[in-house]
Image 1 (cartoon, one colour):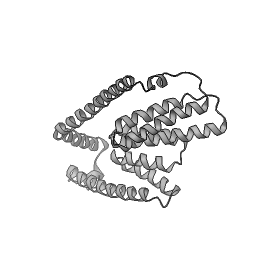
Image 2: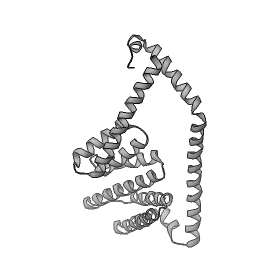
Image 3: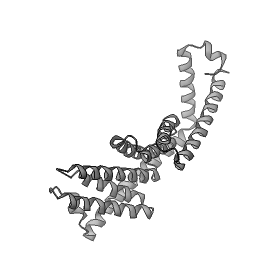
Image 4: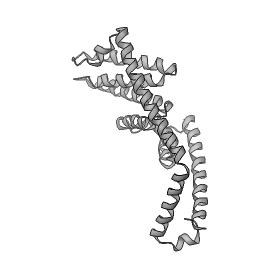
Length: 230
């Protein structure tokens, strides 16, 4: 991309070179990539096992969760919110103890109850909306801790769907995008967050990290181009 040969190359020639590089990279890294895939699959299986175990434990302890999970009654808003907050508080405790998997499950459970409100007054709708955003933000952080980045991204998107100017959601999504090495997209979110909250130290710190990675990435791309066409 940065050589004289590239200037004269056809699109087909550049694609051929690029495909060759990708093929070679996959060959050299096959063992590593396979190990990472196996690790991710094992994490998924472990989460499923722990979720099933937690369900059995709750049933044995008779804490009433099973009834709440399948409660389709039209409960008063106050009562339904009590159930939501009960699950949220339990999730917060689990998160504080480092039990991120069960915390994420509890946040998800609280969100399920959020979908069961009905005939809300305007002020109640505002409260439920705020609780939904808080739950999704907390769940996103739990998923980041678990390295479940796609799940975390979905939670951040859900918050931004409710409030496109939510600085914490922009920052969390930028964190996910940074870890996924999507630096341009991460920087876009960070610039927007910085415009909304110029003094946010966390945003400034992550912006510096993303900027450093973007510089490194450009250097690597330039070096790769020289090898391809040099």
